[in-house]
Image (cartoon, rainbow, N blue to C red):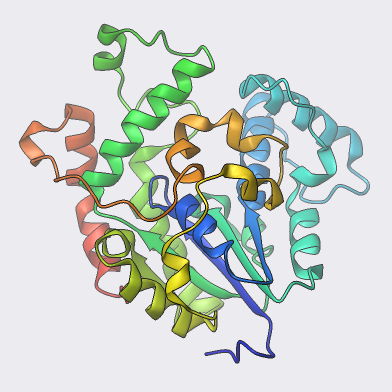
Length: 307
């Protein structure tokens, strides 16, 4: 554990969607001296993915010397995501994110990133040094149920889906999501966890965020103890205003508003909300049920290591 009175504490959390990471980011914003980095590598991943799909060319990992390609990649991503916001190309490459993150002089850093932002050796060389590594997981039934609702609403918001009941029933998150591959969520986070454990941090922290929702005081205290962050019960409640999110380091201005279907509950929260009763497996939508069954072995493997 780091000495929270003198040693900077740097934490990078690898997440799957719907693992309460945005609420945790808002919670940790209450730590004096905290800097939240919100999906900077994740944004670089999506830009890279779209550029390589559309052009068949390799996406540069550094901006300098590759300005034209990166600018084209930014334009392609802007069209895919139906963004009106102008993008800053230099902020959308891995090299810039790592350089800026490691140059921060903040006393505390919490960086949350999609696990999928580091799928290969080309990206993994940009995993920042000097950080404690954390993996957020959640029961697949709850995760996929929540993800199906959020991604369908997001696709409706940006005009990709119609939003009517028939279309929503026909929607399949393993097939119809143009941004992410839900079939790979649990397999992918387990693979990255093993890579980090074997090559970067021999004792990464695993948090089942169902436990965090069930017992916030115990889990937050444990998390702070293991990472060196200062804990107090004041972390259990925070201002419901979303204004603090404007201080977060993001790759795209207004990213919270642009993806409000994913972030609305978290950014307007004032504490960790108790979970609703779980839906029995047999009552889940067919696509969710299929993904739950395929993902459960991976979940059970990593869940054994939760704090």
